Amino acid sequence: MFCSKCGAQNPDNVQSCSQCGEMLTAATQPAVVVVPAKTSSAAIASLVMGLLGLIVCPLAPILFIPSLICGIVGLVKISNSNGKLKGNGLAIAGLILSGFMLFALPILLAILMPALNKVKHISQRVVCGTNIKGLGTAIMVYSNDYDDMPPTSEKWCDLLIAECDVSLKSFVCPDSDAVEGESCYAMNIHAAGKNLGELPADMVLLFEADTSQLSLGQKPWNLAGGKNMLTTQNHNGEGCNVGFVDGHTEFVTEQDIPNLRWMAEDK
Image (cartoon, rainbow, N blue to C red; front, top):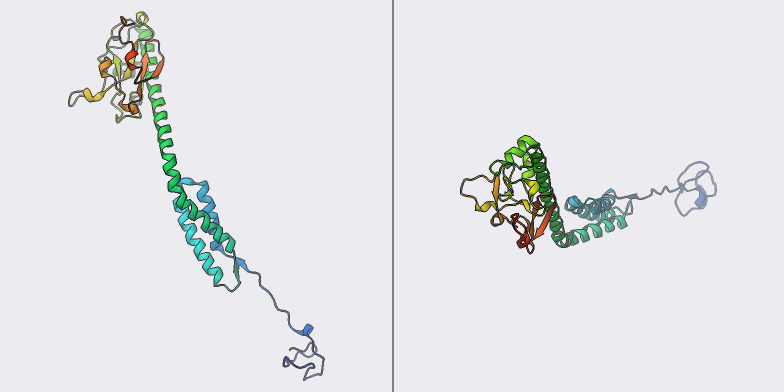
């Protein structure tokens, strides 16, 4: 014990100071300073990365694995700190969150992938229809300058690019294997060379073409043909986009393809 009067140190079991005789009490003892425990930074990092993984799904595996590691490191350090570190709850929460998501993420992806693929194919189908719609409009613009006569079937792609400012990308269905400089679409040979104003509005003008019928080395460009050239291979056999003489475009299902009007004489 320390004497509050003279500062001398005395044995713990004495009641008075051996130097000055001052009575010693517990109040004279130096105050013990209690240092508050710090929260483990590893535990905090584990929980933060686990929460970020939920928000940023594409980076989830990158974040969840370090979250697991930080959670384990945090628990070990807290256990060995003799009370100097705290944050067991944060580390455990980070471990549970990241562990559960690493287990559940593959299951969620397996459930979502078919739906995402379906959305992808639908969006590509829409873009394909937009391409045919744009090409049909370009043909209308061209025919207005040439007494309702469409571009010739032998050069219709080249003429639309040269005179109607059509891009190469407009000829490519995104659901196909074609590249820029090739055409996925063909003109109805029965509409070529005819006055569009005299043709039925529901007659086929443009359609998705089967380029596998082309001879070896022939480039799929300036394609023209009839119903035997139409294909549904770009959309999983569900149907194809068709542009009509009156300018509108439809996605025609495989069941309705036989009802398409290819010649003016058809009913």
